[in-house]
Image: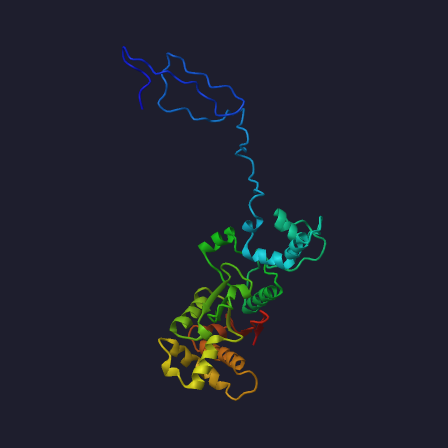
Length: 328
């Protein structure tokens, strides 16, 4: 950048008028001929007494833009709850051609981002700050209450926001350990309507036990001090169904990799229900849960905790068709 001061005989370039950067304001005063210009232009900061037009004050609270869809400000669970609560009906009514459709409170929340007070009864929701769980019975009650909300489609108020995420990043205090299957249709936290830091979840095909799985369960009950341990089987378990087919065709030796280990681990439950009335697969699922519980009670960590009353062991069965969890 050239200097604005020249030596003897030099000719200073002609300055062009300075234009205003704001509407309806006069141009800046041009510098005096005897005052050299600065190399760095002055920042165009608005006057303290005259704020720039169309520019919000820094102290004003942020207002959500109406151009941003409300869906982007709602959690996935909240959206599902709103749709189940009547937002879909409001949308369909508006599309029918009625000039003034009846808008439900849930639809108003979708449209404006707020939910007006209602006079009708409100469905139960999981509390934002649930009371501390002191024993296995309370932990089981909390799990079953969450499953009841899941079945009814009322799972809306979970601790999954930023504040909860920051809180559990420092320490965790889960209230239950759940051993379940790897089946994609059985997401443990969802079916019990629990949030961040609530559950220790261990999953294996058909709840099959090995050193790693058993050690993970022991860590949950002994190191994280959960007063409840649930072994959760489920309807139409694929791992047990594959075991039944493998045993019937006597093809265990043909299983590749570690799949043979799963078949060998689940085979006792299948053999135990052979010839019994009822659905063979369902019977095998229930038998397998009881066998897994029996093996876990033999653990030198889990067994003494149950005998001392510090740990409650429960077997349960999840219905894919209804979403309901039944305690054995």
